[in-house]
Image (cartoon, rainbow, N blue to C red; front, side, top):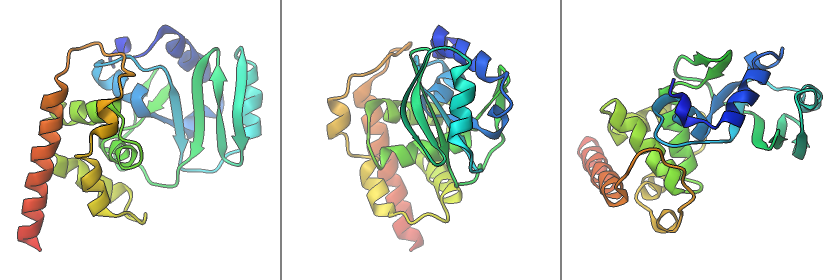
Length: 213
């Protein structure tokens, strides 16, 4: 794992969480998982997901033992807040894991296959520049295409009600991302090259889909 991809405070929180009895139920995803795999940017947030329902009150009780805890939302199967000034969240997430999780410092990390699918899900709802860069980085690292990511998305979310046309449009909609500069990059990047990659790869995917249909 690329430890430079997470902040020191985030790393310290992970070490504390690894000692708890509940953390084995959860896996880490989001930008911090990407940062650990690829080291392309620093991520701070700890976003945990579980396929099983959980008691958020009990998680709060455990987190309070680890330091300064600020609670934003605590609800059934949901916890959002800050632990030692680092954003942390726990969610019940019914969609199945499609790849093998990895273990980092005693904490499960979501697979790259799942990351691809979850990043597409994120892009269809918010479209931040960091989500585009993360997905581009994941695909380039393993020489994958948008088709690979979409196949993984379909596998992970096969029981979800999604609109593929909307997803494809989201993958080439950059208006919000163009204005988004909330990045902590560790490597240089060419935003225009990344946008062109998505435009061309989505175009190729749609062309091939029309042939099949």
